[in-house]
Length: 124
Image (cartoon, rainbow, N blue to C red):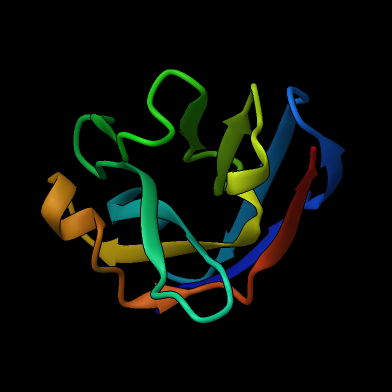
């Protein structure tokens, strides 16, 4: 079992950059596929970006491709999401998620473990 804690959210202006981080504890971190997700009130949680446990392959939603970058540090047990060229529609609560040995876009997108979320607000 792995515990996840997000940080780095905040209020920024359109066009700004922001870096989210998710710290993990417990479990064998390097064996988990990891992802970032977001949710706005009244909508389902959606996949944003993911990274494979095995070869570091990355996956992105079309809406963030070219603007967001996901990375992992197995030594520090962290997952980061670097967000640039932020838009008001990126406003959401962002969650990190983990699934044991997830290595494809499909399996990374259905995590078993979740963090508590961090709010990102992008003003126009």
